[in-house]
Length: 424
Image (cartoon, rainbow, N blue to C red):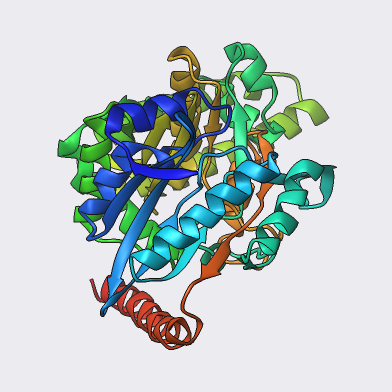
């Protein structure tokens, strides 16, 4: 099999014809990563004159060596032993020829579907068999990890089928989600696609979420480069859920007036248990509303972004990649309204699926990011488990010491980020 560097049109046209592809194996994803300091290789694998596989490699210089990562790739026929052997062997030799310490890859292959508690309900035996194939070809499997930070890309995700009517979509949601969304945005949230001018507002929300969840977050330039580079290829959107505080106060004051009118009407009824119970319900409702109104009144801004998401789009799929939610006014459920807006947008624009890009594999209520799992699960998507990461090590001894240094650097970077966010 012959390996050639491909130009954008040939590289992306091949991917469009494949059943399984990914935005991280698209030419524009390489452009994003060039801005992060990576060298990018767009490789094509030819059997005689026929292009039969592609691989986007991200090369990172480490002293006089390099590491290579093929995110969610390569795009190849994993069920054809001869083709897979030729592609992996070719990649390993290519990496070695370019002074690589190792090649990392994590194909977009699903091995299990899970229920809401993380139990296996369906196997994909043909993809489970790929694990043994890749091991036979020299790959070191990272294992069946369950945490976000264990792998470069999440090993679990929720995927929602949007290739159906809005009524069918809504009916597939968890009862909690349907209850939140049934009144069609009653608080008048502003749900919109933004543009580059909204990146700073997005980043403020992203930082707040990272601090709350004790997660690492990149700097603002990373998100700007991500959005602007992919958006130029019509491969990314930025979505925001915002609120006009003065209009929200008006909505809540009207609600308060409605409760007062109903209290007056119920009080005029003959005494009885039903009257007593209804008055108690209205009193509780009024107290909750007054508590919420107090929070609204404490907001100093006239306009506030509550939730924000940056998506990636490729072929027939949308990914909700980066996003966060402000601590203020969480009772408005802006994140639910925004995700539903994105799902409906994706459906209207002809996409088939929305990937929520990541969940932990163990359903643990004590986990600091259990809320992320719970939120995504409530949109009724498939809970999917990926095959995981494989490392093909080309220089074992050198790689051992370099990897140790890189792990220490990542830990320092992570804790430095948390410290920096907290100080702000």
